[in-house]
Length: 119
Image (cartoon, rainbow, N blue to C red):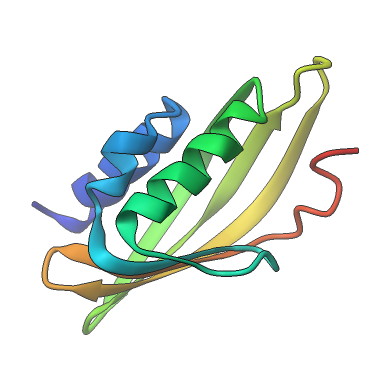
């Protein structure tokens, strides 16, 4: 699978709030960190964490995705739009670093200012 296809599949699972599909992209011992939240280890724990995050929002969508690969690291930049249950939205730029192990993500690091998300 090509880089753009892989990135699209990952973000499609997120935008559909499909935590179980999202977890299939992570190694069994993978690490996930969202902004300044503590890291979560293990794809089963990551699936539970991400599912809880998805349930805290009415919707999520990503756009303007750009991606690059350097050796075993993929970098993704874009814009994310979070829709809150009260009907308001937060749109923010983000950057992700995915440290790969084979065809799966071993470290998924999200850099974003999410401080306004639950306000």
